[in-house]
Length: 499
Figure 1: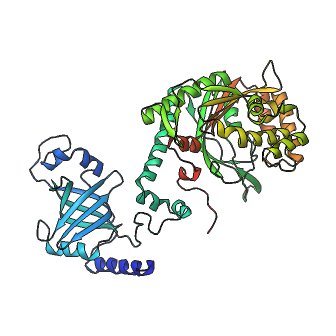
Figure 2: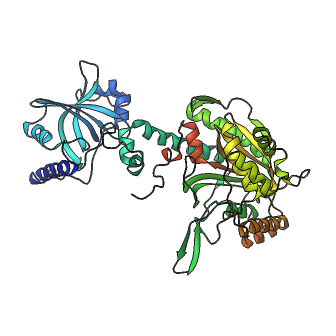
Figure 3: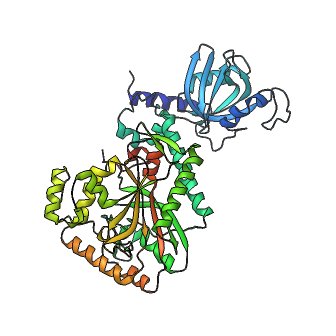
């Protein structure tokens, strides 16, 4: 079996053979009469000489098509081949002495390899086996491939190599490419829902002097000209809510967040979030809106409110369930009154359940880790979780009747957290106190606790309207809707350990 170096050397010789004939292996332009998807769709009309709309043309009119060669099947003086232009695949046929010059056929035989991009001109016909085909009259090279493509995973079996060379992954496995097409449709459908509801799409800083809006560790860098440290954003929340102060009643942003944390099947350091905020709204109204847009989204993308995830049918057609956070933990772990336990007592319960506790973890952090390990994986059908302890979500508004709880919810489907939302805290005095509590947790060793943000509190003191805010994890939503078990499978270029 030839080595990669041998294959590349042979292909370099073919490239030089083109150049010796005065032919450019990488010409500046290409032309195509139609995309391959259009040819497949309009084949009967095009094959009899009509144009795509059915308007008659001269019978046997030549078409020009382009694409990458994915298979070559030589049979003496005949070649069948398959090529792909990104919109679809089509079959080509070339026969020495029939419509094509001997010189062009011989050049094809001499220099062409799988992976090459070509432009072919000829007429359409249907083979004896009923396959739609173009017979080549002339051709030219558009880009010479110097490395061999993987053939059904031969040479690309390592999962991490699939992620490192996603461009080969999407060529070798059409289902992978289709997953990312579905991802794009999901994002477009979400954007359409929000635009239709009167939200304004905005952009907030990726580089921030203080990382806020979430409990997470940031990536930190230094700006030389300003001689100051900056952080890649962990969330756009605080900037978006400043826009509420500034008179924008409905805003949203779809973009990347960055968190310097571990990597697992639902976490990647760089990920995509949709966050939106609506003035004069609250969590209960946003709960109804979230349920509506997710049902509309799934119906729009898949044509049904039901889909498969991990061999289980998820049904978004039914009313989403609602359960209390603390009641859920009590019911599934048999811990009575979990919020009343001291950190040391809660640590004992956590260890009983196989949940790791780090030095300095607060009660809220230990409870959350218990919930994530024991409770969340069991929530398969759509379930809203409500009634969180106030210190668990330091940016959420307290409930009037139960001020130790906040007016917030999360949505879990298929055991995955998809949405986090709450009635936004707009009391600057309470916000300052909540930030101070977070600072206390940070000083006790909870490194991802939130920090005091004086600029944000100052903005709130000018007056912020009551509002409902929602965050939707795009990557996790795509995982759910494409029946994918690892977040790296739905991110085109995930973060990987260096070789």
